[in-house]
Amino acid sequence: MDIWIVAVRKQNVTRYTVIHINRDLQDRFQNTTENWVEKLNAILFFRAANTLFMSHDIIQIDKDFLGIHARYVKRYMESLFGKFNFGTDKNRPTIQFIPDTLSEDVKEAHKYTKLARYRRIPSIDNPNIEKEFSYLRRRRPV
Image 1 (cartoon, rainbow, N blue to C red):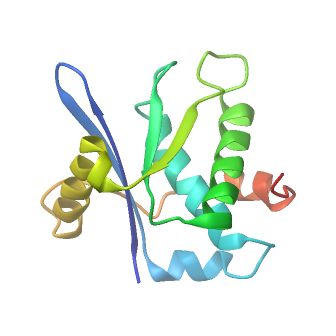
Image 2: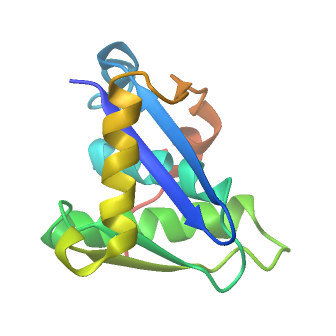
């Protein structure tokens, strides 16, 4: 199944980034490292959010990622922001896992995801994530 990750930022204007990867790209990373699914999700969330993220923003992710998996995704994302945004004010985001029933922003992201799946808005398809995956391949969740 394809994966669609959407980041939405609302200020005066709504901006969004959609990352889409197909099953073939997922298969390239399958079982190549411990927690490969959580690492892949962390990379996709990082790539989507990093395009719009401003210092002091809060990144809200749908609580589909429950329990230990959410903790792993969060730790991997924090590691990616620290590594790839080092020396900037965008290296330590606040990351929350929250259900869409409690967050208008998460609901908004769901709407954009649906639009992207039906190709009504553009997406970044199968981006090169080798650099991020190589970095996380050596990382263990804390």
